[in-house]
Amino acid sequence: MNKSIPLAEYDQQMTFHPTWPAPLPIESSLPKVEPFIAEMLPEALSDYVMDVADRQQAPPDFAAVTALCSLAAVIGNRVRMAPKQNDDWEVVPNLWGAIIGRPSAMKSPAMKSALGPVYAIQDKMLKDWEAGQATAKVDVVLASLDAREAKKQAELAVKDGNRDEARRLLSELEIEDDTKTPCQRIIVNDATVEKLGELLNENPRGLLLIRDELPGFLSRLEKEEFQSERAFYLEAFNGDGCFTYDRIVRGTIHIENSTLSIIGGVQPSRIAPVVRGAMAGTSNDGLIQRLQLAVWPDDIGSWKYTDRSPDRQAREAYEKAFNDLHEMVFGVPTMPIVMHFSTAAQQLFQQWMEEINIKARNGAMSSALESHILKMPKTVASIALIFELVEGGRIEVGEASVRRALAWADYLRSHANRLYSSGETMAEDGARLIIERRSKLPEQFTVRDIQRKAWAMLGDRDAVVDAIDLLVSTYHCREVRTTPGVTGGRPSTSYCWNPAILEGK
Image (cartoon, rainbow, N blue to C red; front, side, top):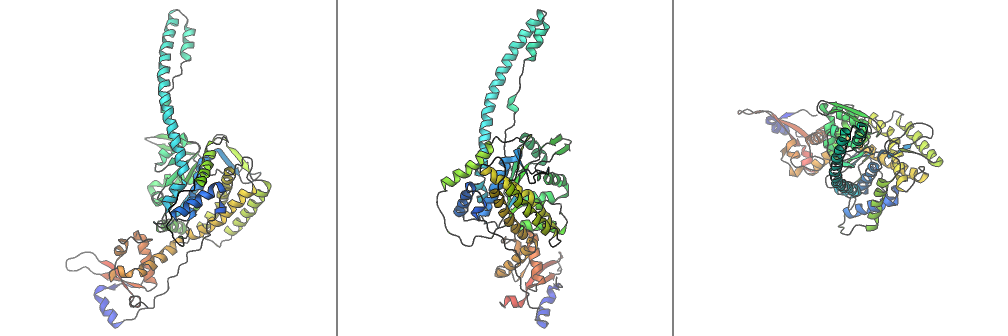
């Protein structure tokens, strides 16, 4: 950063030294990403995803990724994938996704539309549970009446000296308070890990964690006091691991199957610090790399006013895909069905896996990106299994499903490149935005002046500081430090523009 200039000397220095170094260009280095195309999904899903994107004027990527993570939760750990023919490596098809876009990119509406069938399934679970509770209460009362009568008969038997008959009558009493049966569910939004553990035990298929804004979830796991929670989520990514908590209040909680899918939205400026931590090694334990379905699409090129009814046929097909998989009688968590690739599909998957391992291990990419790429085989195998199940396959995962999954691999790889470049590019985009809107700032501006504007990509202090540091290093502006006056106070820092910028040069 350039040397600070006391405010009292600023005017004098500009008088005697009016020239600054010429501003250096600030060019974007955000990598391009592959666009989402409808053919990447089975028709039962793609028509509705594209319909949502058109009606909401949003990138289709948002609804597509939400749909896959939701389907993964509906399937849960009842069905697993064996990516190799002879090895004992098995994959639970749970998925972690993040949809990245600026605040007005329609992330939340797209998620809500894609999640519709999951919420409907959970609503039905609640209604069935409530009906069962009402019946259970009646059964408990009836059972208590039966018990009262049985006890009377047992007393008579004892008086008659027939203790064996009394034992028989009492042993047949089975009074269970079914009113305590927990309500089955799929969705969880915000819960402590201890409570989440209880919910997973009550719902052994697995759960879907939905966070409208992922940064709060991720930033919590960055804090030292929540490292045990971080350890749990690192384990939950695999979907088949056990986890045990020992707490004074709750006692010991053993989670037999930590099966969790995740979907949430995040703004680019909020994900960049997390990525920087992974790149720098300060938090590079693989958490951010587990967001395998992290997509950061370009904003839609053009916008048009759209007001039409949803495509009924597309929505019904989409909902049917979810309902069919939810009601599928095909394996249970304790005895899951394990599917393999067909011969042709296995060859495709093997060739792809060999290629990415060679590229990832050649030392040409960052360790964070390398870790992300090396986790993709689980993701691709999971996606292929989901596609096969959506298409009605129940025996083996075929070539068509694998080809679609490999298309997702290329697509997701391009988005991973953009994600891991975000640390630098976000500062570049923010710096250009400050230059474009400099007329809306005071002649000498502060970090707070910019932060209060709440401009896109500059909503938090860290993002503003990074952008200003870049402006200073490229000679667009210079730091001006004020000294306390006679009334005291603390020194403060503001910034002034290169005269060439003010003159529009």
